[in-house]
Length: 316
Image 1 (cartoon, helix red, strand yellow):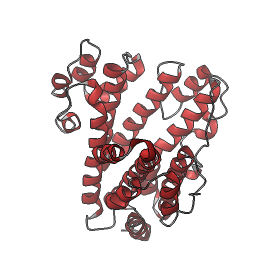
Image 2: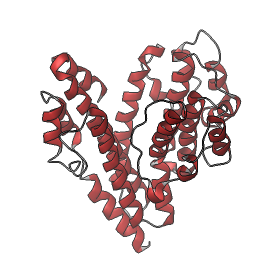
Image 3: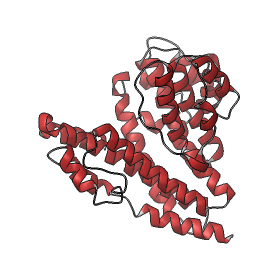
Image 4: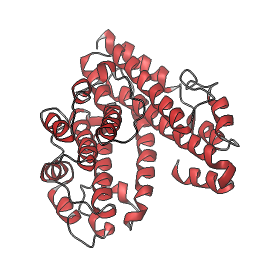
């Protein structure tokens, strides 16, 4: 046992306590408006980056930035293997940055980017590309893998599927979550949006989810109940009770709830090792997701009334 693992595990446990929690997030969601919610949030561990003048988008980005900062701090306390696990888990921030870059390349408005520091994989090179084809080529030569096309859709889906693959391979404790997320992603792309997976993405999805599932998603009409049985047994939970493509939002919400449950179990493990670090990192991610949803609920409260809080309860 190295002193780095001891220090990193202790730090992870301490950071996990800096969550707002389900009750705190619901209280935030019940605020009579965004301004009131931000005033309350400014008094929490998220307050460093929150301004009461923020728009909803700015505030949600600030919440993500707080999570990213916590992950950067955590990785600095860990030995190389632990820091690499955190870097893989934080890949979603590089995906978010790439989304903004794609928006810029296609002439759409862009938002702020996340400062990745040592958690980046290829962002400093990706941001220098000047066309979607150049971006595809660079992704194909990086750990993200070939998205199979030079379109916004292919890049965005390809990077998300690549993220799932990298986490499933590099963070065993999170492999089940990563593969379950990939299953929902593939179904959203095929059953809900009507896309066919490009060759490289179909290969990657097959590696994660098996050939029978991937072949079934390419057929129409698609019945989710039948497709769920084709998933590996340890992933089928993500589609439990999901019968129609328009209900996939429930699978996404259920994914977060399952991650939270499992992450608490990892955090409670005795010893100074990777498992409690992964658990803490994912609990912080769940909290950020829930707080972002709470702010959106608060922003809609003046026009949506009690129904908005009911919707928040259904999701978070």
